[in-house]
Image (cartoon, rainbow, N blue to C red; front, top):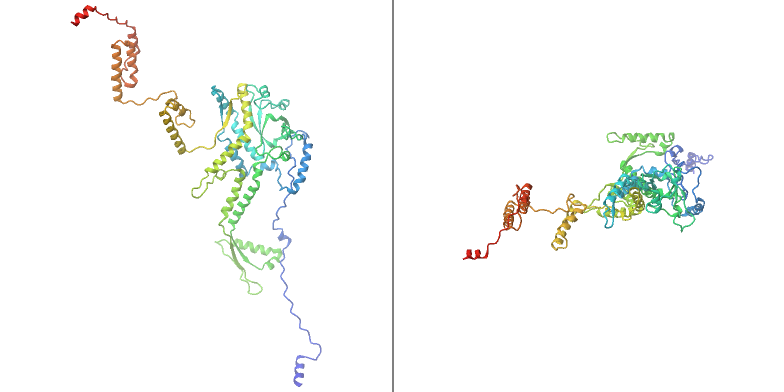
Length: 579
């Protein structure tokens, strides 16, 4: 008991209330504070804008005079409103970009290259004016060809195809010298072949062809009431900077027409190549920039710091200073400095490096670029100039397919308007239209020199077999060679007969044989002396002999009286001489 009492006194037991031992409080949890100032340094992605693809576009001031409303807008407006309501659920945000936006896109090489490549290929070889029938119309064809060059038709149509690619619509104005006569501009001029054209266009009537961009042209009248009518959703007149012009005077090019519901929204044009390629070009630009950024920082260095403490000091000012200081010193020529810490509450900074593999970036970037070519149907070698790589790689097949597509697109975009121009040119040159005179597009594909040599060899062998079989004559084969546009003998005279080379020995034999024959004929009285002299003179170019016989010698021989004919002796004399 004494021991227990002593221990109790020593610990203070039984001497009042024992003081409670305070419990250990848990350490305060660090809070990561991101201030509004630091949040402002990050970028927010832009919100997508909802668009109505059926809104009728606006033109610059002055294109449509006054407050003139497009005819039939009220009738078309009901269909546009219905389409807009339906598109709210299914639309992907596709709408006409407008001419200002399309003009801006035309500055980017990715968009411009597409339209320029197609327009250039469509007019690179151009057309050949031709005539059918047995009558020779070479002079007419030559005059029409010269008129096409004078009017610069090839370049005008190239520009029309280029603007169609940029804006989805382009125009060519047929200038008949009446541009300042407003009352005359609203009258039709026909299609270049009918009676209206013959009455409107006389000799020398077609002055020039002028390209007009779509932004300066707005529709005046169109039929939106009767889908069975030939002019349904086809403008019959246009406003060109305030002037109303009949549609027959303003050739319209639309290569990619849109459905009827969208035609008013697209200003009665079509889908531009720039708008078609925009999603793919946007992907390409983003991919190209991402690859560039990744190459710029594919190897990232960093340091581990006490982020919470750094962010709580002056709203992160010290943190940004530390990052800037590290960036300034990270060059290979500099010295990287790290804080080793105090081993306690202030830990040491740790350096780390993260490197990104770059093995497939070239393929990803190439695929993004190829997608642009696919939407424009242009081979990669035509669009970029990059030839295919790899064993036996060739782009000949793709180029041939591309040329076939260009030929089909020429028929779609050019043929109707070219036929009109050909008719107006004939009226302007001759005052009449010859229906047998037409045109054809020159093929874009051409053989190389080796292939052309092989073709000529096959044609020569074929000609030799046909001549030997007496199917054709050498003169006909010579004519075929002279008419061949790819012949190597451009100055070949089809009517001349080739003369084989004659050796000196041949000349001597020819001279002896022919001279003896001619002299013998003259001696026997078969030919006269003047005729014999003429024949001997003809031998001079081939034999080199008798070149001294002149025209005077022949004339002198002709002037001499003929020799008397010998008389036959009496029969008795002949018998006596015989005895």
